[in-house]
Image (spheres, rainbow, N blue to C red):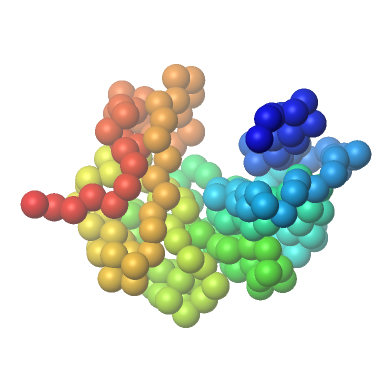
Length: 200
């Protein structure tokens, strides 16, 4: 199948949507849905920078964008991203609640991913049970930490994910500018390695 200009533009638009739409942005106009043979999923999306006052309103906006771009489902992570700099357990819970509200509002179009931190392992394990084992979330999408991915503090969280056969999304990147919450001297690729690691 040849790639047409229309298909390329739709892909570009989908990438821009998934890379965060600025607050107040207009809905994409004039796009036709992709043919049904394509099953596009957005594997990591946030509710921040999207119009709406509630998780439900923001999810409705995202679904309208998804429909225009041919995206079947998305995985929502970390609520409104309001608490990025070393969030307290209460702030983590607020963000997880926002994701669960959005997912429960549109379970036909969205899955949720868990936001946890090894700074408070016991709290994170309780959140894991509340949101994944007993709730609508299907993976771990945000590990709020400035530790290497093989840090012992992550072991209980990884063990819980492994026990429930739940994937972990671990970002891989080196930020060259200001680090929001990480120590720039420790910002190596190893801080953000992908995957669930097993100890030998």
